[in-house]
Each structure stands twice: as structure tokens, then as C-alpha cells.
Length: 197
Image 1 (cartoon, one colour):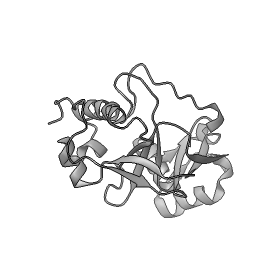
Image 2 (tube, rainbow, N blue to C red; image 1 turned 120 degrees about the vertical axis):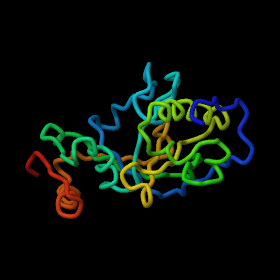
Image 3 (cartoon, rainbow, N blue to C red; image 1 turned 135 degrees about the horizontal axis):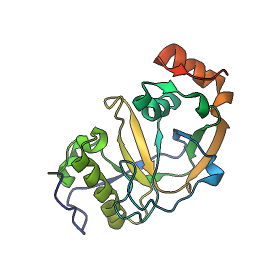
Image 4 (cartoon, rainbow, N blue to C red; image 1 turned 180 degrees about the horizontal axis):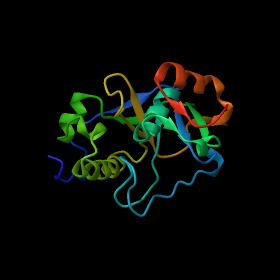
């Protein structure tokens, strides 16, 4: 199923959804948002990066601890000392965002994929995700992003792959200054932090 090409025409039954204005998303980023580049990578690096590098995709979660879970899963939920100066970024939608929602059975069926498109690290699935995001932007040139299940808590959490900072008010603070968030990560979510705050 993951080797098939996505069609040039939008599949029958595939629907966009809306993310309401005022919805907040969170991400952890080494750079301040004012330095973000939006040109694509020559080769895809992350799940919904386009296969051709035609545009840039960035990723956010619905909560600060969700963003931390996604970012630090591969380190065993350890936040390294040299990440103290990274930024906790809060993005609040200033308008209704048009998204392809991969949490719905109807959309998965229309695309001929299953929930692995959101959570799996199988190479064939990642390659399909790279092709899918490019196809989706062809079907809807004004698409703001893709909503998909979190790999860490897929039953309860959603992530957003987004293609532009337009449509958001963005705030960022150095992680070391986010004492309340760091306390919550350590006390409630079993994180270890390698720096003092």
C-alpha cells in the first residue's frame, strides 16, 4: 500500500478540515522563530518534508509537554545541557487553518493508507509521507498543514506539520527561562533535564 503513487487529482472522498482561530500549538526549536528559513531541504529529513524539497515543513504539538515528548523521545526523555538556550515556541492561529487531517478513517481510506502514516518509522511509510505532503499541496495550494497523530501518545495527541508562519502569532522563550514547563516535565512527565533552571 505504501509503494503506490498518489494521484495528480485529489482522491474522491478526501476532505480538508479546519483548525479554529485561537488554537495554540507548541514546538521546541534550536533557533528563534525570527531566524526560521522556509526553503526546503535537498533531501527530506522529517516525516512530512516534501520529497522534492519544494517547501519547508515545521512541526508542532498541541501542548508544551507533547512537543517535548516528540523532541526527546529518542534521548529517553532527557533534555541535554546544551539545549538550555533552545526556544520553547508557542504558535496561536490567528485565523482558521486549512489542514489535511490524517486522524480520520475517511481520509485514510481515501488515500489508501493506514494510521502508520502518522506514527511508523518504516522507510516505505516515510517515503509515502514525503510524497503525500507534496501531493496534498498540489490538491490544495492554500493548504496550511497536516494534522496527524503523535507517535508518543497517538490515542490522545495531535501534531501539526505546517508550511509557513503566516496565520500564527508566535512567541518564543529560551527553554532555561521556562521554569513552570520544566517543572511539569520533570514532576509529571518523567523527564530528566541536564541543566539548572
